[in-house]
Image (cartoon, rainbow, N blue to C red; front, side, top):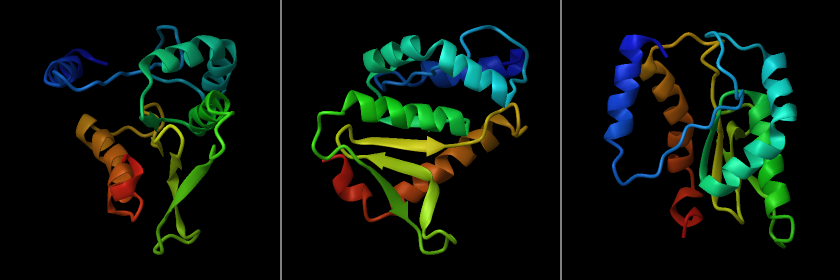
Length: 154
């Protein structure tokens, strides 16, 4: 994150007092502002055990994934973590306006009461911080508007 952007991120982070929030970087090495899909996949393979431990400690219930490989990694992580649960399943959120009939970028995991969102990686979609935030939140908003929202976290 560049200098001026860093101050925006720092201010946002500091204003989250009392709200659990974590950024988990998949590629565990400093780098330039671009990461290839191959580098993401390589990092997931290389650091998978470390990432699983990190996610287990944090125990999040909302995952914002910025690449399809990360989206799949989170699904596999939750399926493995809850493998003994009888109702270990993922649910797609219906949306009649989509050609598939579902929100393709949202999965719900019943036993963990987790929401998994697929967003855009900053390397591929150059958006402002606000634009990036709004793109991720549009997916979550679709979940909030769905019939699943009211009963899912109870």
